[in-house]
Length: 465
Image (cartoon, rainbow, N blue to C red; front, top):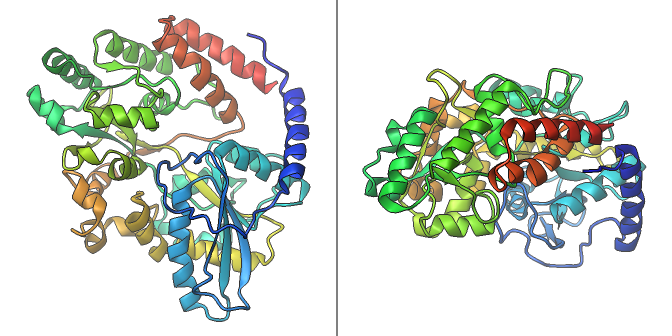
């Protein structure tokens, strides 16, 4: 496969995006009253349309400063609406209105990158997905505001690895939304039909044994062979103490550890333990339909996937239990942080200090982390919240009601085992090749794992030249 030299492809993209920005007018519109908080279909994907709204009009006075906020996740606006009301109530002399623009994932990140690089048309505050974050902190001059001093009062109780992924040279440029601790979600109703106890699934061998039994008894699959996401590769690498990149951030896709992991998944597929799923991975509309119909009995996904169950797989209420991930050998780490969105202040913000203070309150404070759990169902990065039983075990909470066991019981069990997968300048190329070529060749075409991973390594290195 021939791939454009990265320098030329980037230059072409810049010209295209400049044209697009000119045609669209760049910034956000505040004329629309479209509700951007009614969809929770994704933690880290967009809705497919650009939507705008203004928050704070009912809580802020006429002298309030208006900030523009870009995101690619409808549900994040719901959280900011709650936090903005609390901020304006507590700060009568520093009130804010927030003009929210929700755009499709690629549109938002591409427009934002051009805007911060040119210094024109950028919002004051914006979300940036973890996989795209390296694009925004590359080079000598970072166009984002250093937030290190703002997070300092909360640093000791914030999961350090979640701050690290939005950092460069010891400076923090983005505030995380959640830990994204990866767990196993099990449909106990399906498993019990086959006489399987999910609590006895500790290793991948246990997972295989359970999956074979489930398929023999019910014709259903225990899990998925993902062809459009890299969650599984990250899990398998982290459990063996490696990453998808080396210490210098260079791609390391064909490591012996990842080859071993992918060969294990191929073996699971051959034994009908896992199978490809419509949509290519669990966090798609098609896949959620398959789960709702009971065709797959587990999803190995970050805890932010809880909101998918409560909003889009309502038929499974009371049937889903949460457990640590299976591992190759007992004693290996049973989780890692996956996915994520960092929220930033751009250097062209109208009032940088006010934007920093508000963002700190909205994303890092104790109040923010409690509301991130209550409103979004995400595992908060403030570990103090994990111990607040009145919050974590509130019987009125929809997530507590939905799942068979309490998510925070599992989170506290795996505390100290939540590994970090680095996001580097190589990550966009790795994700592109892995999600569009490599996994399809392995799981759909039956290509040899070693051959597929060696070719992926070559393609990624070529793309990075």
